Image 1 (cartoon, rainbow, N blue to C red):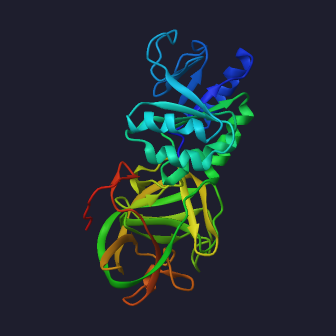
Image 2 (cartoon, rainbow, N blue to C red):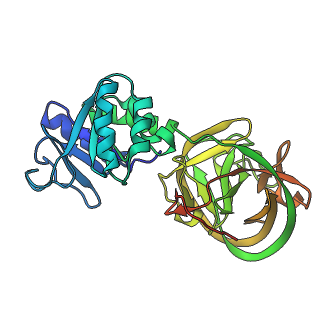
Image 3 (cartoon, rainbow, N blue to C red):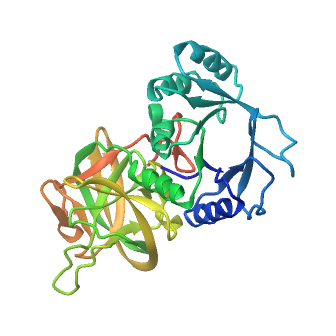
Length: 346
């Protein structure tokens, strides 16, 4: 899950503790913050600073949080209080919710009622609420304001975001064609974690079907194992992030949270430590999934392995009829986020 929809509310009792919490959150990649008073530290470029008032959340505060219309925060402690919040969302009005009791089922009701993007906010003082608040009905709230009273609470939020990874439905697709694809820019992704031999990254030319490229945990007769590395493929390929979004391999940067997955290991979030882009001979692998055919372009090398029916197979041994493993996803994407629209990727 991404930090983009998480607002860190600086609620420590002292100014010194609030500054320390802000510094920790910045280092952890958070860029949206809220305070009850004017900022003690000026916002950095790219940051969003919100206000917290007795009336609610101020989404676009002025220097003293006097400007902007507060988003009201409703306290929902039972079923009788939910319909008013749902009706406001149906009318496209922004509403914040603070729960006093059950959280998941009533939040799903509000997600379904929401008529306009950016209108549903959740306010909580518990970091453990964040994954469910962001994932309800696969979409979740538009923003979650989590009150952090110490730098350690920021660490807890980050750990929970990293652990909340999307579920995968594995598919086996028969290879229909293997062909040389000339020289191109291929991307090696070195992670800050050690990967299992059948664990790797999901990549592909179309989001509808992503191939599993295994790590270099086994090495070869001429190279030592590099279990932190995935020779992922050509620069244009999509890869799946830990938050369920896609990104082009060429856009990955150190610190990005990508999804490491394997048919026997499950899936988890790992961080990108380094990206290497070099020109190398490529090979096109085409496989059939459903009634469509999908491609992946990878370096032609024995250490590049696609996940096969029983074990990873070196791409130099993949041939028509080989069954390779991958994952089907929602095909339409806008800046990596799944959207409901018709699309034809070829």
